Length: 400
Image (cartoon, rainbow, N blue to C red):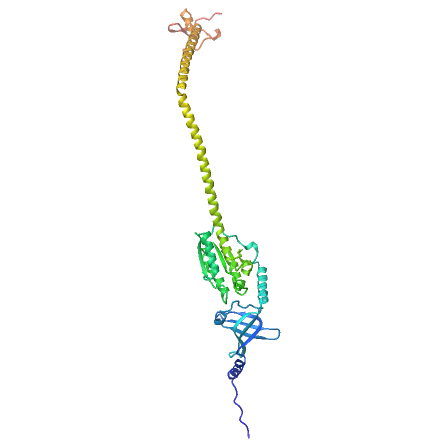
């Protein structure tokens, strides 16, 4: 008698049975391993592979759970995670559905920090040559931080006290947890697109290495490097150092110190203006005092002149009389000299000779004198001038 053959299983049924076995036996598992092939598609879920030296396991952490993670994993990071083991029916693959994860010790975080720091330094993102000075007199400062943290209160308190006229634009972001780095990077890009800020402050208050980890992630570093606006990094306390500090144009030890750096230029300007006002007041006071002294001296001289005026008038009268007498004497002497000179000229005048019977002969009516005997010729004409009148005659004969 032949026994009945068991019915064949479909692939989906077999995978379903395997899934039931796996999930019923591995519903709460904690696993440690190294992350590789980390990917975040548009859905927001995290897909990666957990591996050690001998094996690897596909893992997924859904968006609803990874939002609670303070430090997103990166390739090469050793982590410890808890969750359930399941089978993905579409591919028949075992996968680890992660509910929570954390770095495996501070050493792993430090190793990730050093690895990213070395890679970005090789690209030149930390070079001093690319860092820009802060604007001398900023009018608007953009702040990328949490709207509820202590950092924003410290920043605003310092800015209100030191630079009350400064305009502040806050771009609120989460500063820790899953997705914080992406929000910070987006906030920096948004303020750059807005284009009204003169300087940006990016940071948060103090915390543990895990709390500050968003500022050690590559998206934040690249957003700071790409910013067209100078960036001040202000993360944690003075002892805290992040990747953002190396990339930023200036690192402030605390958020309050960042606000002081921004307001420093305005205070220096106000102090300089106050100093100039004091110097101007001093110059004006000294000038007024000097001119007052000069005016007093002029008044004294004027009063002295007024007292001496009668005597000066009398002196002027005496000098006027002496001048008149001197002028009369000079005129008499000049008149005498003129009379003597006129007499001398009269004695030498040819006209006086004509009065005694002499005649002046000339060769033409214009009175050109006849200087030599050789200038005469028979038949030539002569013009004769007498003491009273003129006559024209003809030369008949010339004898020597």
